[in-house]
Structure formats: C-alpha cells, structure tokens
Image (cartoon, rainbow, N blue to C red; front, side, top):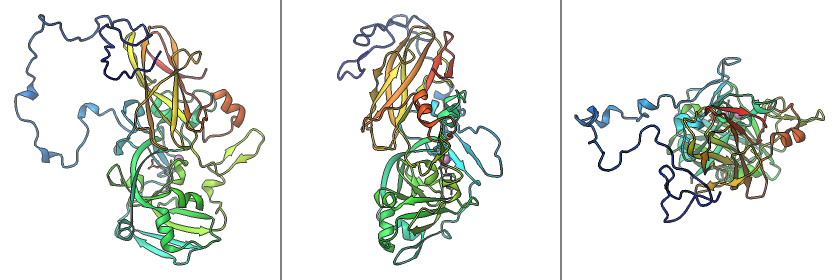
Length: 422
Ligand SMILES: Nc1nc2c(c(=O)[nH]1)N[C@H]1C(S)=C(S)[C@@H](COP(=O)(O)O)O[C@H]1N2
Ligand SMILES: [Mo]
C-alpha cells in the first residue's frame, strides 16, 4: 500500500471511487447512518438545543469537556501500597494529535500531591558552587525562559508486558505517557548564576513532597537541555505535575523529572539515592543490574484500533498511533496488518519534533477476518524498535523498567481487540 497523502487529490474512502492507489478499498455497504441521496433527502430536524439560547460564557470560567466525553478520564490500576503512592494513566485510546490535555496527563506520585504556596516555595542551589542561592518563584520567573514540546514517559510504562500480555487495555499498558508544551528556565541559566565549581559533575535534585524524591542528574544533561519548568500547556503547572516548580529532562525516564523541586546540590559523584539503587535499575540475566539507564528508548503503539475499542463492521478504518524516542526524532513507523509478515511505512503527521510524541496514520481496509496489528518505530539514528523476543534475549525477564517492544493487537472476527504477544 502506498502512502495516503495525495496533494490536491480528494480521497473517497467510504463511498466507492478509486480510494487508495494499489489498495482495493471496496465501497462500504450501507450500514448505520448515511446521508440520503439528493432527491430523497428529508429536511434536517430542528433539535431542542437549536431553539433557545444556550448557557452564557461565564457559567464556566474554567472550561470543561462536554458531558458526553465523561468517559475520557485518567484511570488507576489499583490500590496504593501505602498512602499517596500510586499512579493514574492517560486515556491514549481517546486522544488525537500529539498534545495531551493537562487534565489527562498521567500522574505518578510516591507520596501524594503536596499543596505548596508558591510565595513560600524556595529552590536551594548549593554544593560545589561559587554562590549558593535560595531562589523564590519570582526570582525564577524573571529569568530568560523557553517553551518546548516533549513527551514524558515513566520508565515503568508497559512494564507488565515483560512476562506475557500483562494488561487488557491500551490505557493500562501504555498510559504512563504524555506529551505537553513545557515552559521554564533552562537549568544552565541558573547554574550560570551560581557558578558551578570545575569539580562538579553530578547534581542531586530533591522534591518537596513527603517522599523527598531524589535523583542524581549528570551535569552534562543539566547544562544541555534540562529545564526548571513552571508552566505546562500554557498555564502554570497543575499541583499533580509539580506546582509550582519541577525539573524536566527531555528524553529521560520520567522519574528523573523531579516534581515540587526544592533543592539542587552539585557534587563530584552520583549521590546513590534510593531511586537509583534499589529502584529504577534493571536486573539482567547474568544477575547484575544496569544502573543510570536514563534514556527512554524508541517505541511506538497503535492507539486506534486498540483493545479499548471494538470494530463494528468490516471496511475502511484509519489506523493511528504514537511513536517517540528519547534519542531525538522519529524517522519512520512501519505498520503491519498481518501479524508482522509484511510492513508498510505509515504517514507521519508533521511536525515531527525532537523527543516529542509523533502521530502516525495508515489507511486500512479490514476484510473482517482475524488478524494482528503491529507498529515498529525507527529513529533518526537508525535504531529499530525490537520485538518482544529480541528484548527478552538481551535483557532477560527480571526487568520491570524500560520495556519498549513492538506491541501486538489481535483483531477477532467479531471486531473485539485483545493484547497478544506473537
Ligand atoms: N518529587 C517527586 N517527583 C517525581 C515523582 C514523585 O513521586 N515525587 N514521581 C516521578 C515519576 S516516577 C514520574 S514517572 C514522573 C511523573 O510525572 P507526572 O505525574 O507529572 O506525570 O514524576 C517523577 N517526579
Ligand atoms: Mo515513573
């Protein structure tokens, strides 16, 4: 099948016509509602909502989605092991484009969401620096700032797929993933203000939540593209995402983007906090463990159709999904509609941004027989998203983090979709 973009040429997927070059897309048989042919058309009814003025603007000073979209929500997998330690997942199956609405961005807290008064919040920067400094939020917001669109993924995302198909829905398999516009001060600007000692090589970042979350950040990353973020999708951070200040490390595992940031300490070596020794390390088949696996690997998933959906009938569907890589940009996404026997390059929706979600699309005609759908991302460096077997061969079965294998969705004859490993 060729790519679907045809400048100037209007495509007629649903109602006959030459649909896709090289792909036999039969007209969809009359099923469900269709617009009547001219001549048989009845006048449109005038619905109740067209007959009187609706609600005035100021009844909703902060807007909410339509009540008909009330199932598009974050969901949690289960009870927290101890107070405040839990997560909620983004409903990727219901989203469009690449930006995650702020209210649907997944949450991961180790000790709940602290309520922080920005007027009282301070960021301490100390350790191997010439001028240890306490910054207020006002101090930080005055500094030069940037806005960048990047994905944020928990390294535990898809962790349940290591030992078989661990989850029954896309939201629960891949929902620790989002993509926002982040605004803040480059950390390099603040480090310039305080003057990092030539011996400084690592920075401890500490959160103000009850978990006191701490991670060691390589100085090179801090100077390169780390951000001290105070705004997300155009407004100040929401409490659950770190209000009033969080660290953001593009392309690195979500855990390192420390929320409610209150302290940065420059040192010579990594600080060996709990989150980089006991947790967030990857056990390997030889009994050793990988440590400081910061980068989020190249990955993709089909978001429609997914187990959260059901196909009503055979016929045309646009397969759509997301691809991303901590290594930079996505170069290509291949899609298979026959369980990996053949692959077709999907269309990539522009803009394809550095370390952001990339939307891909492929026109598909389902013939109504059982099949398996897969996507495989390739990044600009040529790295190819592995199969589950390749990943397990390299990493064994004892890792919980950094699972980035190709995801398979099985479509049954009745249109029910399930998570399978092939
Ligand atoms: N202070 C603090 N920072 C934190 C956490 C936390 O519990 N406390 N959770 C981390 C983890 S594991 C992830 S995946 C991301 C989640 O960010 P989000 O809740 O904004 O999606 O924040 C990270 N930063
Ligand atoms: Mo995480």
